[in-house]
Image (tube, rainbow, N blue to C red; front, side, top):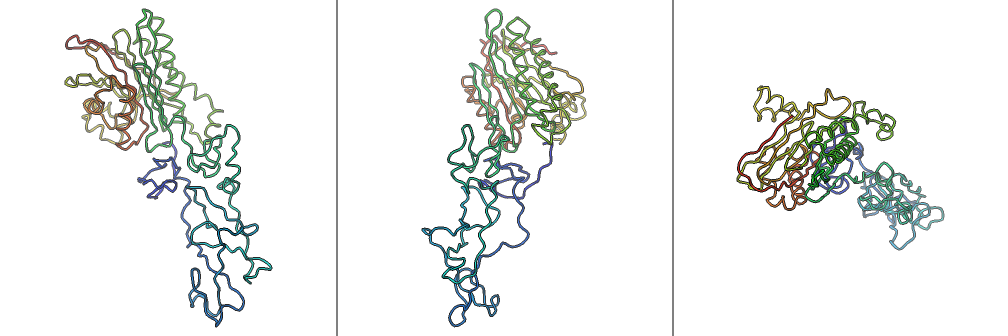
Length: 469
């Protein structure tokens, strides 16, 4: 990420008790922001004990029971145990115990905590003879508003969302609970879409606090009436500002460009080139929207929004792919006895090392600089160089379009083919779900997005023709 966050040494999430790993910034199960967990107090917690009374216990003996001090601690002062209010008794005036909603923990003890007692008979005129106790400090309404005023939680204003964690607080416009501060799941945390013969799934993963990937899938018709299928997958550059907006803008622009150019007869490879240019222009325009950037994130970085893009078009018996960055396209034949293939080359440091012969592929991708990209969409890109390639498959197969959040866990073409379900060409949405699950099972260290396009052609013998640009 582009901002430094406070690291946590917690072993479990304070909200849902899910085990945490070192370096986690957010809980993988509930999304709890671990950077807002208060530091443990430096001193020891206060221990509740009884209040001294005049005269003390008969015979000058110390009272026994919970909270009674030792003889060394009491000295010559005699103590009596404070009476505990029954559950049916009314609370003390001005000192009603506040019960926290499930999953919310107060920063200080209150009368509802186990092991603590509240005295319902204190105050002037009390028959207990105890000293007057100060009323408990009212909880901060910013952290327990619904606990102090439960009727507010029961009757939320129209259109107000309730927190998914405490189920009591209202969600503010920034997406955080006004009661417990829990960040709410965003609409883009998990997305699925199936459209005829193409399907895509995108997931936030287990380590990122938001999903910075985006995709677009669509179908259209060529001038002769034959179908064309489109899949675009974009990966926001986390070190840039507003990467989630950049990926969404690029996916939408590229998809719209293809839907405009393919029906009017443009060659699919030329249409893909034009779509990448349109996507780049859309991302570039975000860099000039400074006012909106400040409103979106007051601490936004000055570098321009950026993302990578990869896309595939199936039209007129051709498979056309285009890309900028390190997202990939794989070809997995339905006949698994024939070899799969990777159809794209990364714009990355590792790919450059391999291309120049300075490292072999194993050495390059084992280096910590392997995923440093050398091409992207954004106003600060050195030069836009869209890559396109056109293939004519000679047998049916499956086109896998994905971000590195998936191929990190199935890098080679053989590894990718091994995790693609055998029936993915018949059930593309299910196949995409399985592939995302594979990445999550592997650790889910990044956002994960994959689109599957079954390519159905009758067998025509060996070989395939392709051209690159």
